[in-house]
Amino acid sequence: MRKIVRMRTSFKLGAAIGILIIISAVAGWYFGPESIAYNEGFEQDFGGWIGDADVPPDPNNPGSNVEWNVSRTTSLAKSGQHSVELYIDGRQDDGTVWIEKMLSTKRNAQVQVNFSFDLHSESESFNVIAAVVGFAGTSNPEVEADLKVVGKANDVSGWKRYTYIATLETDSSGEVWVALGISVRWETEIIYNVDDVKVTID
Image (cartoon, rainbow, N blue to C red; front, top):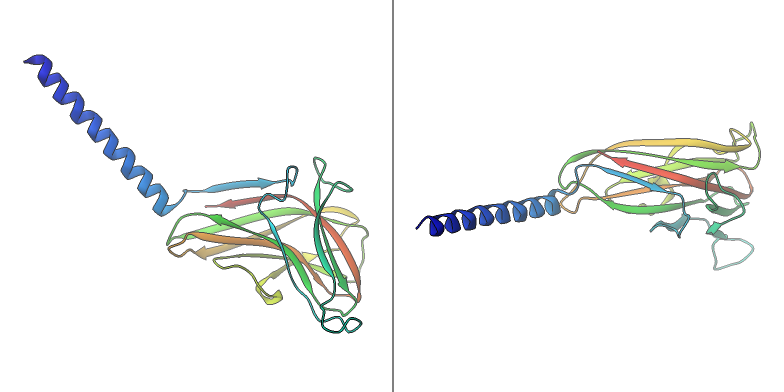
């Protein structure tokens, strides 16, 4: 009789633990992770980052926009062996190019997004040749106006760290998009490199 009671007790305990595990898994899936700490140095690949741009038509090539490119390179790096190179033909004094990534976090909640990255400029200049821009939001950035200026690209010759902070209200998807890039401010072709991206969402 005691053996049967013990078996029933063990079964009830096991069932209760199983139910708690299921509830925790469902809650984790619905509400998303409590916080995110994400680092990217582009050592293996793009790490899920996607290149995008909002650029003007090219008057020298009717029917086409000015050239822009996002590429992974070994020619320059803040740490490791790789960085991402951002290029845009800015001779029309217009255009923005960036990289973007979607991260999943808490659903229907207020979150703070804090991300930083290193940007390399070949030279220091008092002229604003390009602006450094960033974005954090619940939808994919599509146009230049979506991104906010976080600093000048030619403050130093070499690497400089930039930071972007935003407080958001997530929807039922829990999706947060982050982006960083450069925006033309001078009529010239421009190339900058970015590396060591860090994103935290709390």
